[in-house]
Image 1 (cartoon, helix red, strand yellow):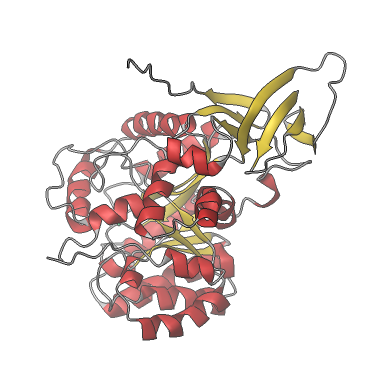
Image 2 (image 1 turned 90 degrees about the vertical axis):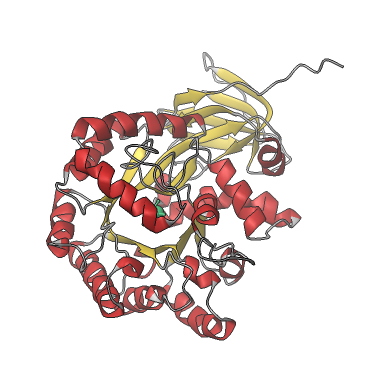
Length: 411
Ligand code: 17E
Ligand code: FE2
C-alpha cells in the first residue's frame, strides 16, 4: 500500500509512505507505485503517530450519576460516589462500558491506553475483566493496566494483599495514592511498598501522586527518591502531582534536582484537574494543574491524560485527547507558537516514553504501520479547528475513519 502526499509531523514537504505486511517499509519524498500496489492520495493532510491515552480510569467511565452525582465537584466526593457504584460491579458491566469507551477513543485517533483499575473493592472483578479485554483488544486498542488502590494501600482493609493479587492477575504497573492514606507515615510506607513490589515483580509504576491543593502533600519526593534508589528510573510515573502547583518555589528548586536525577515521567490531566482542584479556595481559586511548563523546560518527560470520561470525577468527555491538549495549553500558559506546534507530543511521543512503547511506536521504516491522518495541514491548525481524524491505521489495518466537519453558511 502506498500513501502519497502526506505532511508528516508538521513537515511542509509532502512525503510518500509505503506499508507492507503491516509495517512501514519506506518513507521518502517520492516513491512510485509497484505494479498492482494500492495507492491512497492523502492530499496534503497531516499525518501523526497515533494518539496515546496515558492516564484514564476505564473501569469507572460512563457511570456519572449512577447511583449519585458528585455535587461538590471534589476528588473526595467522587471517591465516595464511586464507592457506592462499585458495590454493583460485574465483569459484564465493565466489559460493556470499556467496549464503548475504547470506541470513543478510536474515533479520535487513539491506539494505546494506560488505564488505572481500582482494586480496593469487594472483588477483583474489574481487574479480571480488564485483563480479558486487554487480550481481546490487542492489536486494535492496546491496553496497559495499572493496579490502582483508590481507597489506599495501608488505609484499606487488606490493601497490601489486594495489590499483590492484582499484580498476579496480570497488571502491567503498580499504583498508589499517598495523599489519600490516613497519615503521612502511611503515605511514605505505601510508596515504599508499591515501588518495592514493582521492582520485585518487574512492573512499571504509576502513582496518583499528591492530587490535592495541599502544599504539604509531598509524596512526589518519596516517589522520585525510591525510583532513583531502586534503579527503576523512567519505569516510574507520577500522575496528577497537583500539589506541586501549591508548593513554594524554594522547595520546587530543591525538588527539581531530584526529579531530574530520578528520570521519572509525569502525567498531567488538565481537563479533570481544573475541574476538581481549587474547590476549597474562595478567591483567588487555584488552577491546580502541575508545573507542566517548568518540568518540560527542565527536560523532564510530561504527557497529558483525559483521566475520566463521564464518571464521578468528570461529568463530560468524548475521548478526545485534542480537548485535553487544548485545555492544557490554556491552563499551563503554553501558547507560544512552538509550544502550540509541538503540543501533540503530550499525547504521542511523550506518552510513548511513559508507556515504554519503544520501537513499537513512531513513524519510521521498520516500525509497525500505525498512524493517523487529520483534516488539516499541521498540528496548530488541527488543534485550533478541532480537525476530524480522517483515518486511523494500526499495524497497516484501518481501524477508524471520520468525515470532515462541515457547515453550510447561509448568508
Ligand atoms: N481517582 C482519583 O483518585 N483521582 C482521579 N482524578 C480519578 C479517580 C479520576
Ligand atoms: Fe486518575
